[in-house]
Amino acid sequence: MTTGAIVAGGRSTRFGDRDKSVAELADTPMIRRVANRLAGTDDPVPPGATRAASGDPVVDDLVINCRPDQRDAIAAALDGVALPVRWALDDEPDLGPVAGIRNACRAAPSEYAVVVACDMPFVDPAFVATLREDAAGHEAAVPQLDDRWLQTTQAVYRAEAMATACDRALARGDRKVLAPLEELDGVIVGDETIRLRTTARTFTNVNTREELAEAEAAIAAALGEVGGGTDGGDADAGDARAGRDRR
Image (cartoon, rainbow, N blue to C red; front, side, top):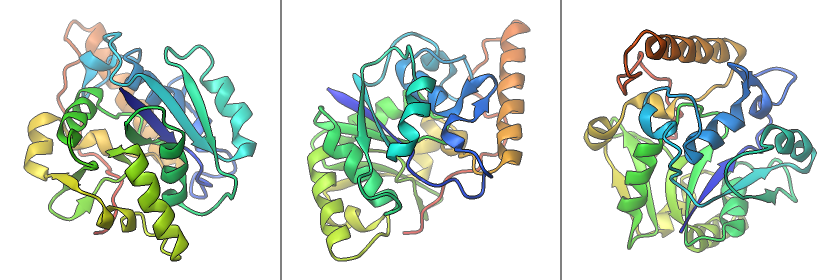
């Protein structure tokens, strides 16, 4: 059993005056695109185009972490999603991603949680499935790009262990997203392995309106290729803007 934990509680200050989690991305709210890819019901957009649209989910249910004031809009965006949904509301907003991940992991009914940020609309579900395999018998499986950048918001955690590690980090006043990982028996999935399994586009996050437009263009191009008789493939459609966390 694996839970998909989508973290959406940030303030989106670079995006403007609207919550980016529910911003329309090619006619679908961004958080719904993330949920649909985990559920296998998204458009066939690479990377992982086939698995994203296959109808075969990579998780058993979803936990949505957000602030209380976001819940109604996100619930509307997720209406009809093909997986059961639970909520992990931030009772103390603005404590950062450590608190968001902690709350999501606390609410996860499964032993493991696949944590994905709400602004990663190209998350590769086939890659996520391999991370879940990497995490078996460990407390975390975290991708690392270019031997420098740990992708903590597209990673798999043993839910109870990660929640406890986050609690300890917050209790000592450490809000760095890497702080809880120091306590875990984790597996690092390196750059070479990542690029054998997927493309760096899986880590692309959308922080600004300009990046939203770029993501829309990438989706349109991918769907145009499918309509033109190709399979939509898993080829990278360009260099990704990966969400990066310093070690």
